[in-house]
Amino acid sequence: MQLLRMKRRSPAARLAFRSTLLAATLLSAPAFAQGVSADGAKQLQDSLAKTLGSGLFEKGILSITPQGSAYAVKLDLSSTLAQLKGAGVTASFDPITYLATPNSDGTYAVTSDSPINYNFSGTQGDKPFAMKVAAPCKSTGVFDPKISTFSTYEATCASMSMDMDDAESTVTASMGAITSKLTGTAGSGGGVNVSTTGSATDFVENIVGKTKPLTIKVAAKSLTTDGKIENFQLSTVLEFVGMAANSKDPKELIAKQAEIKQKLTAALPLWNNLTGTTKLNDVTIDTPVGPVKLGSLSYGVGMTGAVKDASYGIDIKYDGLALPQSPVIPGWVAPLVPGQGNIDVKFEGVDLEAITKLAIENFDASKDPPIPNELTPQFLALFMAGQPHVTLAPSTFTAPAGAVSAEGKMSVMPSQKGKVTISATNLDQIIAAVNAAQVPNKESALMGIALIKGLAKTGADGKAVWDVDFDAATKAVSVNGQVLSAGSGGGAGGGDQGGSSDDEGEGDNAQ
Image (cartoon, rainbow, N blue to C red):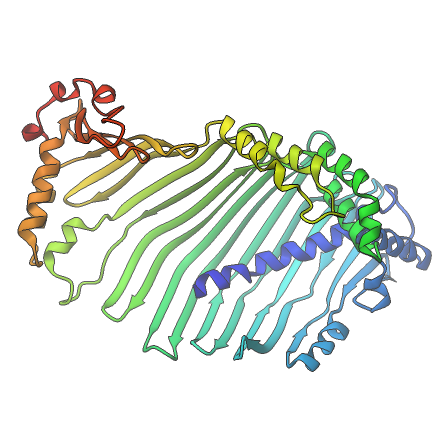
């Protein structure tokens, strides 16, 4: 949990926020070279006020001033954070300054030497909470108003440290050198394609429990990230932000909702595809019984925008898993530990474009609820029309005693039914490892494994294979055509789907 908190507050996220803020500042700037002057600074300020509202400047949170041959864009939250003291919160955030120099082609050369430094203390509920983050960073890039983002951008931090303290634990974390890069290119229909990469060295996190006697240290030699978003309608999103920021009264937005709905529909699907992966390398987790090690651990996500065949997927991979050599871990465990594995799951088959358009078309902020409840059947019909389903791509866990793989597909609505194919190598070695285990009720476990082996067929590659067909509604289950549970539907789909698959190999021969 603390590691997830750490990621949410990572320097890469803050650098992304800083670059987004500057992008909004320069978005409406003239696409031609201009001399740096007070008038030019005022023009940039007026442009940003159209996007984020004039209140940022009136409160001194944001300022734009000439500085030599560049414009200094400064973010200073001190006046706002000072107001939190009345609520029992103490916070500080060092000002951030960008220097934006106009180029002859209408772009801006951007640099910053502002570090990331902030402190926060207060309460979570009625319990104290405090956090401190420090990262000396520098950045440079080229902002292109024509695509509403940076064509190139790079940020580096010599190091990063974080201290966090709450009622349950104390956490300290650090990283070595951090690098983040971004490239932006024009997409279609006014969209933009953005790619990012990042890396960090020597990640270390220490967790010391207060309410429970827990001490954990997580370390990784390196961390890498990459991400990509295709045809993101950034200019439309910034336009919506500007409309909200400059509306003094919610009624103003309600009066404009027809225009907003038209522009939002035209901007669909907002983006085409979004992907991202985070990978930790040479991971060590110190536990009370010794260190658990991983060669690598990666987590990837992918999702479409509001398209006709929308999807969302998760891909997790690891290798080099090794448990501690400890007397409390018996020897029979080692052959069963999957040293490497992967799981790849995707949810797909939903016409998110039609659903989104129906929601936009019927949205009325002046009513409660803004979308009529009477439309629920239409939404459900659209959701089920694409036959939404979950697909498990070939996923394998490999241990010294053998490997187990699975792949399949299951419908989601209106029923949950599908087929999963499971296979195993060296099944007899797996059984032998379980047989060597000193655990309660071992005989029952071995009988269960023997039953599973008896249901297996031998695949073309010699693996033991189980084709499992199931229907959650009728509780019908069959394995390799053999009906295990006929269900209330009389076993529909059980034997018929499996056919005479047992002829391909008897269970006793499966290895």
